[in-house]
Amino acid sequence: MSSIDTLMEKINPSTGNANTLPSDSEHYLYTQTRIQATSRNHLQKNRLISGFKPGEWLESYKMLKTRCLQVMDANNWSTLAITSPGDGTGNSLTAANLAISIAMELNRSVLLVDANIQNPGICNLFGLDADLGLGDYLLHNTPINEMLINPDLDRLVILPAGKEMINSTEMLRSPKMIRLVHELKTRYPSRIVIFDMPPLLSQADALGFAPCVDCVLLVVDEGHTKTDDLKKAASLLKDINVLGTVLNKASNKKIKYQTS
Image 1 (cartoon, rainbow, N blue to C red):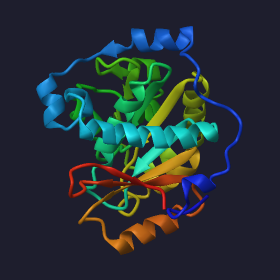
Image 2 (image 1 turned 90 degrees about the vertical axis):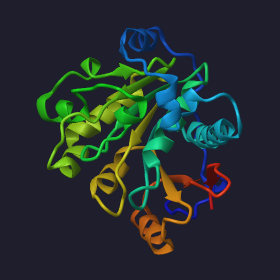
Image 3 (image 1 turned 120 degrees about the vertical axis):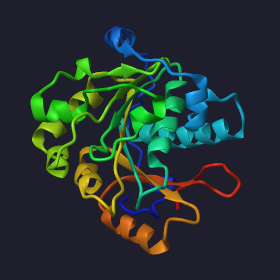
Image 4 (image 1 turned 135 degrees about the horizontal axis):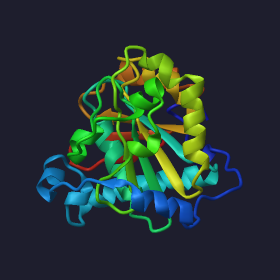
């Protein structure tokens, strides 16, 4: 269960299921969080599925969501990091749209964390104005609840990247970050936590942080990601639970999910 060639069917399921209704305390969190709405035109321009009517593209993300949740539920996993071999593959867009798709489930809630500290993109995708975020918590102990933003979508909350850190690799694998991940994954039983990470081969952040989460999803770009880079990424993740790969920017303009 350690390489990109791992089949989902070969992952050993464990007992436990996240399919429980949000608790009262979780409902309070998601209703009291600061709301920032953006225009549908902005969402469409940035290719976020919440800005579009039902269609093939939305169904592709629903399929991705379903496959991911099947494996995560079987293993009682609730934290997922999304990364890519190199730049420009669209892993931030994949993280955002997967988060939106999971939040459409009535018995789920999602926390989307922008952990790409040096090159954040989640707030830009949603059109959010955020001065504080994860970096401010790690550096200055800024309370997490003061940074959370609801992008006017039910059951979805975003934690921005916040202050840039020169030592982001060390901070993302620090005991303080490990405690935060544990807190985020255990406080609310129905919540999925998605971390948008920088590319594996250009920064050490994703590799250093990967052992802190339950599993990793790798995004590749058809016609752009080189085979050697994919092999290198797979080698780096050999000891990590890899859900599979997402083939982004496919020729038929649909995303594809591959488990082998």
